[in-house]
Amino acid sequence: MQNLSSSLEKVVPEAEDFLPLLGTDHIELYCGNAKQSAYYYMMAWGFKPIAFSGLETGRNDAVSYVLQQDKITLVLTSPLSADGPINEHINQHGDGVKTVAIWVDDATKSWKETTSRGAVSVFEPEIRKDEHGDVVLSAIETYGDTIHLFVERKDYTGVFLPGYEAWSMPTDIEPVGLKYVDHMVGNVGWGEMNTWVDFYARVMGFAQLISFDDKDISTEYTALMSKVMSNGNGRIKFPINEPAEGRKKSQIEEYIDFYNGAGVQHIAVATSNIIETVTELRNRGIEFLRVPNSYYETVLDRVGSIDEDLSPLKELGILIDRDDEGYLLQIFTKPVVDRPTMFFEIIQRKGAKSFGKGNFKALFEAIEREQESRGTL
Image (cartoon, one colour):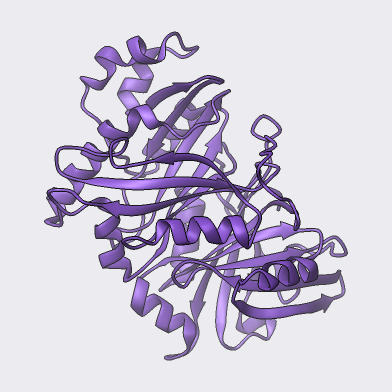
């Protein structure tokens, strides 16, 4: 379940790796209909089915489908009764990320280290067993109703976790070239960004990689602020966004209004060939944000020479940015759920360690056009 690319691994000297964190284990989304959501992520996104938990496995409260593509694991969960916490989460937030699970060597130590520094416990370390071995799990609260689950699986050889059985489909699922989780972005409310920056620094030993204020991320109408937090080995990166004052309602405000609070805004997934990946995703019906064609008239003046031909990047709407270590290619989907909340970023890094600052204005103007079409700008 490891989320690690050697090309991205970067030691962050200011961070304290007292846990430490090995990578993203999985991401769990609460869904109104997990079976249909699983079909969407398989057929449109190329995730392969690997495990299942539900009535057939002795579970009575919920059903979960586990999907995987390279080092990315998604868990899609729906309730099996009319009440309970999963229903409450879906009623409040719609479909969205509940759990960001982190792979660790020691889930007990991770829980003790974080709770001793002020984290609120979701549950204490517990051992789950089956014929394939033992897994130790523990969990803490983070922004909104999102939680971090610590997963210790060094003594486990099963397909996913105890309580899950192997699951497959009779049809072939073709991947689209997604490799690993590059970063995950959280949206928080007015004045809350620094609270959660402090949480990740104090509770989890993260360091701040970069900061963007409303001068960096603004258009004629809207603005936001963002700080990027990373653990010491650079395998886990969490940008945190909050709204900033603008003439109209920003994308962060829109998210918080429809999600009813803080939560995961988008999941950035890496590819080694963004042109092939985005072409295939478009062919399967995935919709992406578009910037004006005029963006491409001057982009190479800003970023310099790149390996790719500009023509397919322009055709697909892929954005380009450069930092001191190289350049990156990125594109953002429209929301993938009914509420204008969660979306995905597809990113290919050609040495760059940054997050596309040079694209912010064009990107957020594209988002504003979508907001205007929804009547929420």
